[in-house]
Length: 118
Length: 108
Image 1 (cartoon, rainbow over the protein chains, first blue to last red):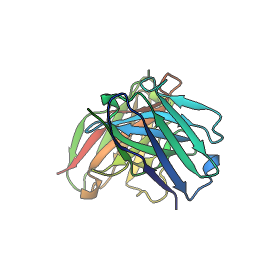
Image 2 (tube, rainbow over the protein chains, first blue to last red):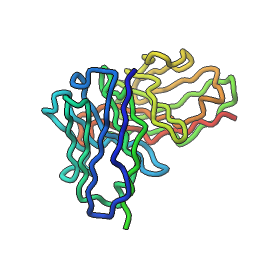
Image 3 (tube, rainbow over the protein chains, first blue to last red):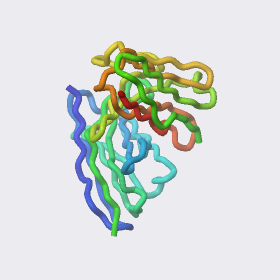
Image 4 (cartoon, chains in turn purple, cyan):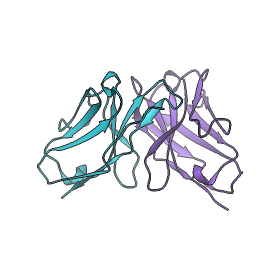
């Protein structure tokens, strides 16, 4: 059974940093690209960042480029998102999502809430 | 960047058919994926690559895609289908993985 479990969310002041983790099991982690997708309160889904299975290529939404860094540890089956220079508008539930056979997301974690507020 | 447009809401009586549309420029040339999100829960993929269903998804869920519109069809709607539904594609633009704004399905 595929499982994705996010952690690391919380309350942080504007300009602060936070590191999210996504522990996975039930599939060969290194074979699949992974993404972070966020959802602001009461809003829709928005893709944030992606990383290929080897970790050799990364992709970012324009809104987070230069502030967020995605990475993975294939020996630990874990995905990360380092978030720096956080803004109020980064407040959201952050989901990690596994790439499917094409360019969709076939499994999602339960999400972790990040609140940026003074 | 590429834009997907969904109607904010639809209402359907139990047992009827719900059709949720997703509009985009020549979206028929792309693979469209659909997700169901119930309140307080993570999204679940219900259709991928326009019309395929992941294992465990009922046959009542189907999809089509042509021209500028992709459609998620839910037959014999049940109360448990009440949720937000999102379409998604990949586009070679600055933000490649694109979601529609979501459609809230209300079962009357």
